[in-house]
Image (cartoon, rainbow, N blue to C red; front, side):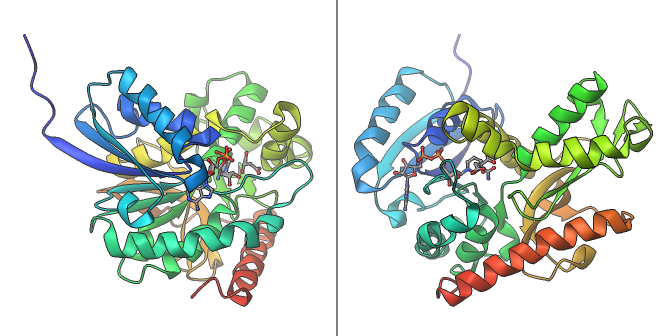
Length: 332
Ligand code: NAD
Ligand code: LMR
């Protein structure tokens, strides 16, 4: 009594496939959690030569799961081969921050990876390719990759701030004793860094405005720093940077992008069109909805002075990162 395999297949490229996030991500992609039950998956895994064998080990385990939707797994150290025909590209491969490091330390170390990968995406990916940059500094790495892919519309390049968004939902749900599902209207603005602004101005929980349920001291003194510094907290407590939660956020980001957001907005790093005073071309986090396979920035939200200042601070950091990588010649 066999059922027919879904007719539709997509090629998903994952870089840094032998890393921690890769290990938490690949099995969920292959299970259908990212692209749904009607899409078969062809995985292409990119690693540096020294880690290709470990990625091949992960490929053995992927085979052993006997996932019905998984058509194939190819492992390579060639970016051209890895991005060939890619419909979705998850750029995870990069050196993670370790205790005591700030994201700025990563700019030079990781910036050099994303230019060549942007070029390979430009030359080899499917016309419809959608790219999520997870590797840090994610926003600026996305900017670098986009700068090397002139034939790919820049709105296909995104950076992951969904983990920050999910962290904000989780902290608020704990505070209010509600379920994350009851919360709407949360936004993470700016950079995926400690300067980010998790914004509760327009949030509701069970239909009630959140600013009427929690006091300002909690928002400013606890909530914002907790969310913004959660990456460092995980590094300190766990001894290495977040992996399964980052993978889960990547699944959420791509699923919502491809299949559409449900009834509420989320947060993603997208190329600014100048909305909310964020300079055009910067990859910054915004409130976004997806329909028809494209992100749209939610328009018309009031931005009170407290929010304005926080957004401007994080955007200034993004401009400084852009200027730094431009100086290093990484914008082509
Ligand atoms: P990891 O060190 O465990 O794995 C990284 C992998 O990338 C390694 O296997 C390495 O060999 C590979 N790699 C390095 N250069 C590569 C290249 N040029 N091409 C292909 N592969 C390459 O690190 P991880 O914990 O998986 O984290 C990966 C990245 O994700 C880090 O930059 C980390 O800071 C970032 N991160 C981002 C978020 C976010 O919310 N945006 C959250 C967590 C982690
Ligand atoms: C995170 O947010 O957990 C990651 O970006 C890791 C880091 O360096 O903060």
